[in-house]
Length: 132
Image (tube, rainbow, N blue to C red; front, side, top):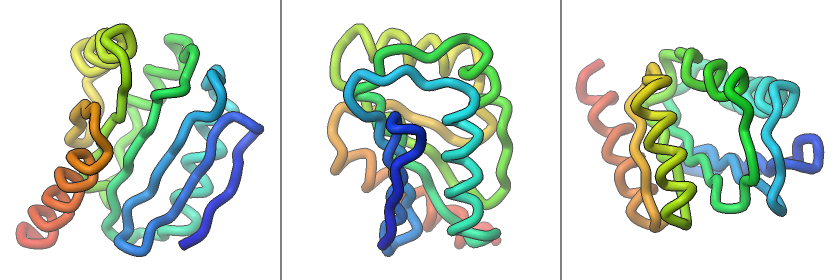
């Protein structure tokens, strides 16, 4: 397991089971520079091995539309799925709008509980392993 902080806004954690956690810190604003750096860190650590992403936006304050579009447009064939962890009804509403209009290129679901999100991500990893 390894971790790092990106631009004092986001913590990236590589878990032993190839699940990467991207955790927003202290009501931060996610911008393009931070998103590009966090993606590069995850991809550098992972290489082309199969993985899954847990995106914890419970402490995220704002993401501009350009950054949301960039995030949704990314297609990395080694990512089996991404779970977005939300806390409030407001953040859930914004995340649902993201899913509806931006249409991420990898299987993506919203969760309120980390344990459920991790279980779903492990299931996505298993499905991808069986289909290859």
